[in-house]
Length: 247
Image 1 (cartoon, rainbow, N blue to C red):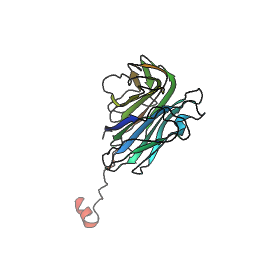
Image 2 (image 1 turned 45 degrees about the vertical axis):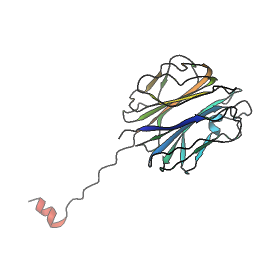
Image 3 (image 1 turned 135 degrees about the vertical axis):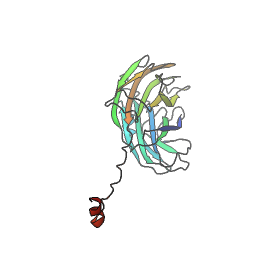
Image 4 (image 1 turned 60 degrees about the vertical axis):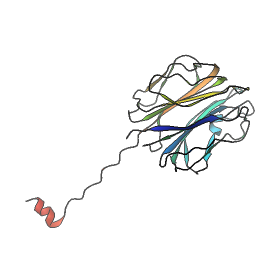
């Protein structure tokens, strides 16, 4: 069965968040579906930490989350970071998600959360890159070629203001398009997914269709469709019944 997805919630914290955690608004997932959560942000120069490595996630349902993507900067004054997790199967009750970045002085948290079906929670073909173009066309080569039943996820973060999500060819759907529109935090996070993509190359039409941006990074991965269960083995008849079948 193909991996399907439904967007649940996207948003950001207040401008100039600082240290400490951030809790999202509430949402209700579909019972039995895994959740995919992505978060991004930048340190305002108050620490030397790798922002992506510091990102953690918890939630009010007590789900188990496995980090599946992490790209961060370890030098520079404003260090950017992206992280992604996939949870175990959720319950159909209202919940919130809490992101934390330890003692990092974070400008803002930017996040997107969606749910998926027919996945065992693993990823493949992960690729990441820092210092990518902050405007115009760009391409990313996955570490594997997805099947038509897989889901492909692409995430881009850059510093800047009034920046919209990346412009993509037909077939891609945005699950997060968040940017700073006031204050001095200068961040923009865009996440898009494709559920019928069979090339190892993701082509971005425009990394920054609006706004002013710089210092971009991106990552991408495949969420493979879960393997179909083997059909049950039918036991062979025994004794006289087996003998009668040979006559």
